[in-house]
Image 1: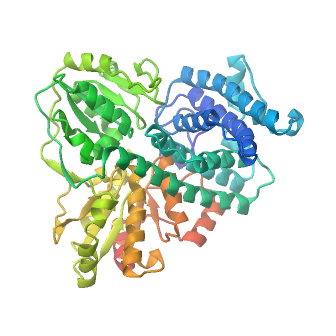
Image 2: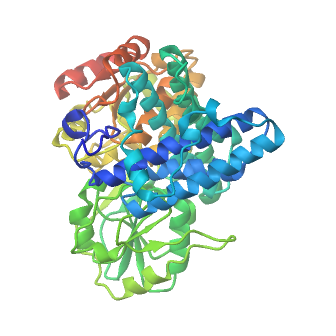
Image 3: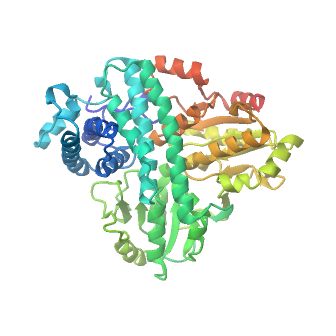
Amino acid sequence: MSMFCYQCQEAAGNEGCTVKGVCGKEPETANLQDLLIWLLKGVSYFGEKANEAGIEDEETSLFVTESLFSTITNVNFDEEWFEERIKRTYEVRSNIRKIYESEVDKLEDSELPEAATWRADDIDRCYEKSKEVGALTTEDEDIRSLRELLTYGIKGIAAYADHAQILGESREEIFEFIQRGLAATLDDSLGVEDLLGLVVESGEIAVKTMEALDKANTGSYGDPEPTEVNIGVRDNPAILISGHDLKDMEELLKQTEGEGVDVYTHGEMLPANAYPAFKKYDHFVGNYGNSWWRQNDEFEKFNGPILMTTNCLVPPEDSYKSRVYTTGVVGFPGLPHIADRENGTQKDFGEMIDHAKETDPPEELESGTIPGGFAHEAVLDRADEIISGIQSGDIRGFVVMAGCDGRHASRDYYKEVAKALPEDTIILTAGCAKFRYNKLDLGTIDGIPRILDAGQCNDSYSLIKIAKELAQVTGVEDINELPIAYDIAWYEQKAVTVLLALLSQGVKGIRLGPTLPAFVSEGVLDVLVNKFDLKPINSVEADVEAILEEL
């Protein structure tokens, strides 16, 4: 094998990519990511010891968090970027070790895990080593499965923590767990029960991380409001912004104001249309296009520059490659990159804005509007109506259809489920899974839309908060007694984080699809089934029937 990666839903044959990533990642880049993650575990070994001794080092926390984010599927494809990041990892690891040893105790190399000491200044040696440190180096299948499940859950936590930190919301508890969890994957003394406990704890930390990000987003831009989002176009040159980073959104809108350039969202940036702070910009038009995997066609037709702030980037076609810009931890060979902020200044989007002025307006894909902005405050403002509807029988219940979209045609299952659910049910969603059905006209129940879109994947926190609030006001002690069923789609590691967050809250009976993760062994799956009643999706007809019995 030239590589091995099975972290996303599209892993080849639902077993693993061994020649080239289905995502488009070259094997050398995939292997360098494995090496970076392994070295970050070594950094975290010292970070955990420092944290236990009461030493907090912001450089280590932010570096580990940001670096993990870069290894999520469809974020960074740039081999040279990872070469440089690995060199920096040696420095960060050395610094945190020195801090610990200067304040606590000297450590002997012979007693440390290899990931905490290995280094090579020769990049060729790094490429050789990168083939030796991937997932398959753990021989026991169940231990390997739990280590990877924990690592992927932590990756999602890192992504959300990074977004929150950019907006000024940092929580040391989160950074400490990221390092403790990573370090645990190097500890051969930990068995299945130990690792399973850490996996469940990662779900609890995920909830706290999403809560922190929710606070950061709403504190900066206001609570999302129910909004009819325009999906048509205007006759002006424009910039398309995709991903999840709302700080980038804010700065782009500020810098394009008065420049004669419109701004549209794409993919997971769609929920930005519902934030009050962004609505004041007249040149903020609405959303263009659909889910991430359709960008090859949609970016071609947009005509203007595209800004990728986070995942999910599809390797761009030559016909529009010169119009795609990356920023943050996103990278792709040959694409222009917008540098990070320095000393409190904004990112400089001037090059993109000048580029946009030279391009044609977007080609229209569709017209009309789609509803959004139904995060927890907007929904809970109508809690009395919802409870009344449940009590009267007008609302049978809710179906949570959150998570990710992907290329597989089998994902039309979610569209067909949405169409097949009876008119007395309401769909709660967050993430890009909604693009399979968010343009269906499913009507309303007593004025409440039958599709309530809470926002991005991290806004799945809203779905947890809504459920908890409904349980409290109705006097239900067990969240599973609420008329809520869960039919979740997954693709990458942030969806794994959301799944673990739901499990940590005691949610049982989740359907997961379109396939079960390749990295979950049969033994670990048995544990998840027995403990949480986790199950694969079935046919549309069978699942809709079962869902209605659960409500």
